Length: 147
Image (cartoon, rainbow, N blue to C red; front, side, top):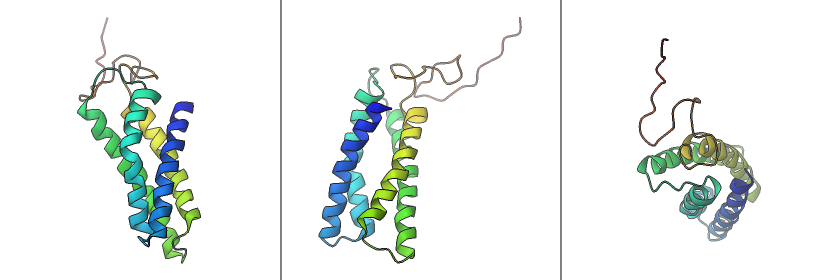
């Protein structure tokens, strides 16, 4: 969790700087927000994959697809915070974007730790249910063996 936090601080600093620059350039809330998150997305994937969750088993497209899916969920909720603030009359506020970043970070960590970077070579438990290794392929239910 500490490594994820360190990567998150780096991504947040980069993303927030880009958001602030976008707001200063007049991009507006939505475009500035999207640009900031796009700036940190690739960096976050590789740092989390290689350092936070220590994936050493080579690149797998399933990991990238799950990462993208978790990003879309977390980012959608972040964007909902920004849109809700705009609906309440709060526009182009850096504090609104900080609130969105907090919600995004929590959701993104949970998704990354429990869905994206799981399996062989990861830092956590290498099994989903204690019996089967989690891979980038389809997940199978354990078969019960009758003695």
